[in-house]
Amino acid sequence: MATSTIRSSASTPRKTIPVREIGDADLRFALREGWEDFKDMRGDIFFAGLIYTVLGLAAVLMTSSNSFIPFFLPVVAGVGLLGPLSAVGFYELARRREDGKEVHWFNFVDVRKRPSADDMAIVGFLLLTVFALWLMAAGLLYLATFGWGAPTSINGFLTSVFTTPEGWMLIVGGGIVGAVFGWIVLALSVASLPMLVDCEISAAEAVSASWRAANANKGEMIRWGIIVTGLLVLGSIPMFVGLAFVLPWLGYATWHLYTRLIDRSAITPLHD
Image 1 (cartoon, rainbow, N blue to C red):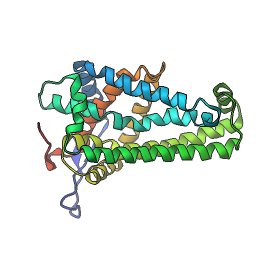
Image 2 (cartoon, rainbow, N blue to C red):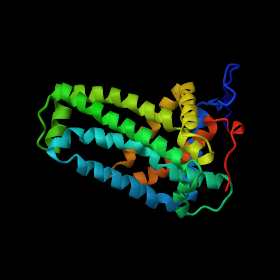
Image 3 (cartoon, one colour):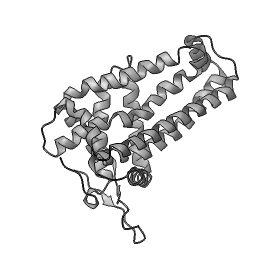
Image 4 (cartoon, rainbow, N blue to C red):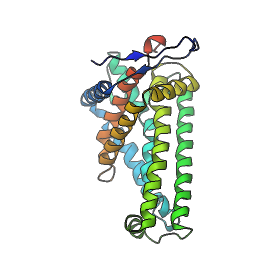
């Protein structure tokens, strides 16, 4: 099992939640333990399939009209920005399994009973705000490369994107801007939402700890983000159905990553 080093400082405020430095072994640990959780608790596949299939199809339908076609790729890609919010039910299942309690598929929704449920909603609103800003940035990029003209079909739009210099400028620019927004979401949520499921703390404390943990482990978090993105892309084929398997795995894995990033001895986990 991988070891972790607690970051500390004499100037650190007394109530600041300590974070740890992690390594590649911790990422492998999180993925491995997440897979074990997935194999043990497969009843949640229904929820993952329902949540992400509905979100994905809604995104496609929403951007199928001419006026919104330029947002087709940003919306589909940006759905992943909301992944941490839809995974809170898996954090609850992983928490119960860790405590040695019996776990059923309906425990997925028990997360709403946690004392920090309102704070989870605050973090969720924060992620929705980032998603909205991402769509605004994507719209500005489209205007800068293609102007005000709206495409007449998704096929025509995709052809323009992948076969023209302007389209490749859009792809490169969108990739850079998307990476920035992806990092923001990862840093804000990688530990905050699991921590709010685990402990009775405020949204501000959880987000602060998550942000510090991510920035203390930039290299590992970038690798984690690449792994998550790759799995989400694979899971989206075809028609987002594969996410019924990918999302639970990543949800459980993120829980275990949280346990490596945060020094839980400094906080008091809640127990049922």
